[in-house]
Image 1 (tube, rainbow, N blue to C red):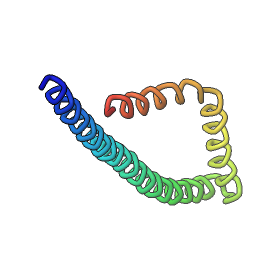
Image 2: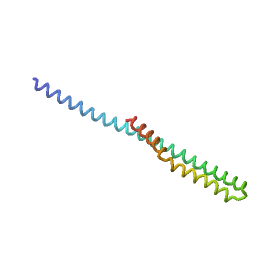
Image 3: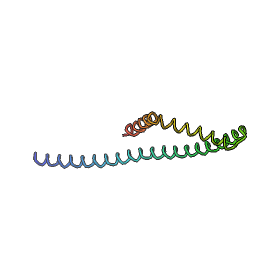
Length: 116
């Protein structure tokens, strides 16, 4: 009788473990899907906003270059001044890139690991 109860308990335990593992697998799949969806939508939004910003900056740069060109009586000088400004901004970003990377990495890792 005790052997039959032990056998029955073991069969029930095995079934419970299999059920738990199957549910855990489904939960992990849903969690990964949720995290990937958030990353992809955030990435898509960033790309679209970045594209709009670049187009706006392009038109603004042309306008400023033409205005400076008229003020300096040389369109070439207007474009050179604006190009020089962007060159200085690029050098500045290169110098402080480590200060920019750290907060981005911290934010992304917090977003990813808080979701797990």
